[in-house]
Image (cartoon, rainbow, N blue to C red; front, side):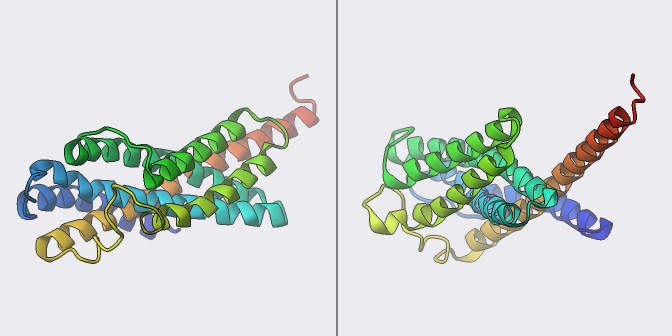
Length: 225
């Protein structure tokens, strides 16, 4: 992504997040019984979207790394995995808050919650493997990335396959009026934030790799002897 794309993503995130907050809390109507607790929906679901996107990016680039052993593919997969852990944590925390308000329980071991927790744990394992796994951790991490990607369709379809406390996937298409506007503004802002964080993380990762290459070249040349 060029500099213009980064500036656009930064502007969308900077404008979209406050706009989403204002629309969600001041314009979108309250639902009976849940009242203000329902407002967390406008940030819980977009976070879940970004979790799925991050996992798919990680899985696809993990496959590409296993095929070509290109370190750039591995770098993209690693960056996406870290963002998956971040957005997954937001999903689980906001979901627990919603669950307490809607169902009077912080957690229930139903299908969607369990599969979502499993996905997050896989991505945490990916990050830990890449950080502490040593030589060969690239291939092991790539395997975890591919495996995590297979869990996403299961999470999405779980409300149709099993009986769960979660609503069906028809909720988002059924939004009307300012609720629909607030939701999609929030999604746009989260997409922009995701793109911006990916760009920053990739720049840091590639800079670190270049520094390691320079250090290894210096050691090979005997400059530190």
